[in-house]
Image (cartoon, rainbow, N blue to C red; front, side, top):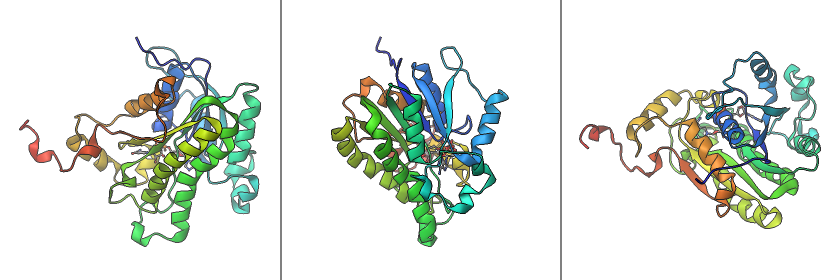
Length: 299
Ligand code: NAD
């Protein structure tokens, strides 16, 4: 047997607010492997996520038995690095007003304090935000484009910069990308394709820079489509899921569990030689050069 054993490891998963997305699946897989998991939740959905948890509305069962324990939930807005970045209208918004310490720097400091002497072993970036995602790139405003790249790609740079100094020697960072970084996906607009391209390129450069500086391994997973809350904002996610189902190398629907297991592997010592990689976990959709629909039933 070659198990993934993350017992004694501290993980922080940024971008969890319900039990539908990739972040949640990754939290569960990391916990199943024995890691202590803390999560970062976007302030606008922080209260509702906490309420769902306390009302027992989320699926806490771990594959193989046992219940998920989340050590702590930190409010986190990955669009802001330090408190001075937060515009007054955001700070005064009722969903933010009662919260303190939600910028990346503040969360990094709080995590460090909370973990005491222990260091952070695993950092997962599972968040994205493109206010103009439904607008074709050619019509996207500068503001919308920069917001998408800032929240969805620079946030990884900022997290590595601020969390890196106290991450352990064999620590790992994983983020979530999408095929739109490499190929045209009609409807994935607003600069989100640009943000994913930046995320993948930054994964390589950060792998070298943070690898040499702090010994971090940094990888990204180019995940197949999943009908998460964020993906539903695109407007056509169900159609994309069906399209992948028919046209991927492997049959079956793309699964959050496949992505979560791959993320857990990348964060484990079994992946000690892997850094700077974009790993496709999409049932092999990305290798196809032609639709397969016409071939159905002929193989
Ligand atoms: P999700 O809704 O579960 O996760 C996105 C999270 O980002 C949400 O919890 C949201 O609250 C959070 N978020 C948004 N803006 C934020 C901010 N400024 N600061 C902090 N958190 C913020 O949806 P998901 O689809 O599982 O997305 C997770 C990651 O997977 C994203 O990077 C997404 O681009 C990527 N991904 C998704 C798909 C898909 O089809 N769902 C495919 C490939 C990659």
